[in-house]
Image (cartoon, rainbow, N blue to C red; front, top):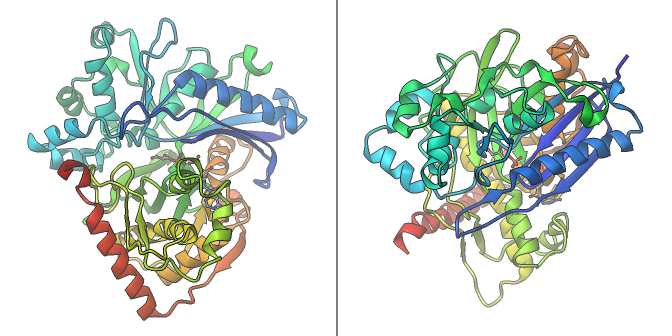
Length: 498
Ligand SMILES: Nc1ncnc2c1ncn2[C@@H]1O[C@H](COP(=O)(O)OP(=O)(O)O)[C@@H](O)[C@H]1O
Ligand SMILES: O=P(O)(O)OC[C@H](O)CO
């Protein structure tokens, strides 16, 4: 009897594989960072072949580290950076262009055009999304319009589109399966989240041939089997969800009103709204959480584009820290930021501002500003951005959170978590397993093949490791937030104005 579930977690900066046992604990893990390609200011690309290669290598690496064989794996769950767009030739399996990453701003003018043609409300109603370069639809259009011969081949039916989940499943099955799940489809700006179909009208508006699109299925079902040449056995691929929805699932937020916040490259807060697609009045997205047990459930989402990526910026571009965890040591070496605010709007601002033209801004510098202040201000910016999103969510849902479940790489930072709790005035709960994205994908796969019985059984695996309680007085909090909102104002529209 197979004993483990494999989760393939294809994130924005690294490909990861984790093998889980029935308690939801990791028994083997492997991870590889891959190349970030920045061809122009505001453009971000990945090499789809490198993504596949690193993902395959870490899958083999995790099997080796856990000292098991493919026969010991009951199923594979896939979870992925969402929206990132790959178009490939189905005859050769070769991408026609690099993957255009969710953070890429190149299609902002296409979005402006959609808004000026009056499609904003229609798109919002059908897809739950705000017109923004973030989503896949305009990225597919850009590839068809700009890569020589691509539109012609797409019209002949030779090209396929997929987000990273679809691309991985295609490669894992050696070109046999072209599929996605409801949660990923809901991020394309091409999918009607109410009637659960690719939307003919939106496809026409963006001039995208329907034949390119994958079949859309629930998030927990058998999509196909790995080609035996890859791992030496056919393993069922049985779970698929966008990484933020997978984290919501891994945090066992199954009841309407429960929420989580993931601190990875970006930061994403999702609240389960059950079978109801709640429309936001405060700049949040309405998205599909997952399809499981014969129904689809929805979530409200606050998407913050740059979170952990700002810490990587301190490390890789400014070179003022050597590792991301080191940021904590510098942040706690000073009492405050000395009046410095960092707004990491490197790729514009997402929720709740939705400004494609905002850019990174540092304000409040004085002669006494030290690198420690800058590092602390960068970490604090993650918490402030989360504050803005939580307020929007509370207004939209009418629910005041008692505690916020957190996960993702940067939630390991104790300074950040304490500051987060202080700024929100809400308890922050960090679970024992912070790899909840991978865990959620594993749960979805395991449930599909009967490895776990039901959601109730997996819920028992969730346990808190540390709670952070708010300790800041209200006046101080208000003062800090006032400064933050002034700083945000100064970042808005910068790219257009300059
Ligand atoms: N201790 C830490 N303090 C602050 N940021 C951290 C810490 N550890 C990791 N990070 C940040 O978290 C991110 C990695 O988290 P992860 O969940 O793996 O992201 P992703 O899935 O988006 O690749 C990186 O951007 C990194 O800078
Ligand atoms: O790579 P992550 O984990 O920051 O997630 C990226 C999101 O899916 C983008 O929508």
